[in-house]
Each structure stands twice: as structure tokens, then as C-alpha cells.
Image 1 (cartoon, rainbow, N blue to C red):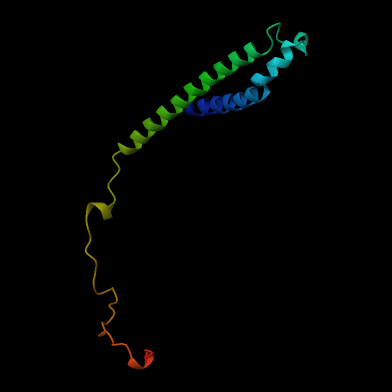
Image 2: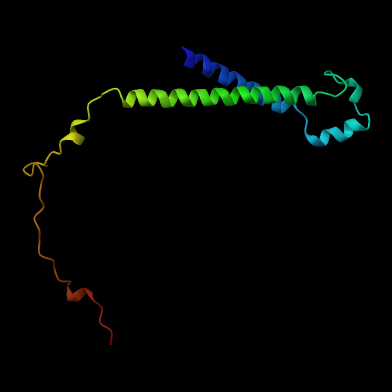
Length: 124
């Protein structure tokens, strides 16, 4: 139950991170705003959206990192439970079985044949 909740939060945070990163403007876009090109029309205040969006991105990245660590810990815990469950060792690994030679077909060995001299070209 908890694992399912952590996976859902992890996926929602990952999608939100991708969306926030795509919304943000690059560093080169700030030079146009410094000359008055749209600086007064910001929605997030006089500093612009850079501070708000970068803080929100950092917060979501922290949540994503923590959920990743939680899922990794849970996966290693479950792997240890499966290993320590006391399952029997497979029979083929615990007791080596000698092959039964009567069931295996054997090819008859033939003496190697010498190459035929008629096929070899003669150089003069």
C-alpha cells in the first residue's frame, strides 16, 4: 500500500518537474527583459517568475530524490526477504546428476581420409 502511494507521488512529481523545466526561460531571455521588454507584465511580481519557479523546481527535485531513495530502499528490502525466505535450492544445483550414456547417440569414428591427388593442380 505504501509502495503504491510512493510510486504515484514519484510519477506525479516527475511529470511536474518536466513541466516546470519546460516552462522556465533560459538565461539568455533575461537580457531582453532588462531593457524593458515585458518586465512590467510579469505575473509573479517585480523579480519575475525566475525565483518562484526555481524554488518550486528545487522543492520538487528534493521530493523526487527522496522518493527515489525510498523506492530503492524498499526494493532492496524486498529482495532480501525473497532471498531469506528459505526456499529450497533447485535439485540440479544441489545434487550433480551423472549423464546416462545409453540415451546419448554416439557417432562412429572414421579414419581420416587422405586428399585425392587427382584434385590437386600440378605446376610445371
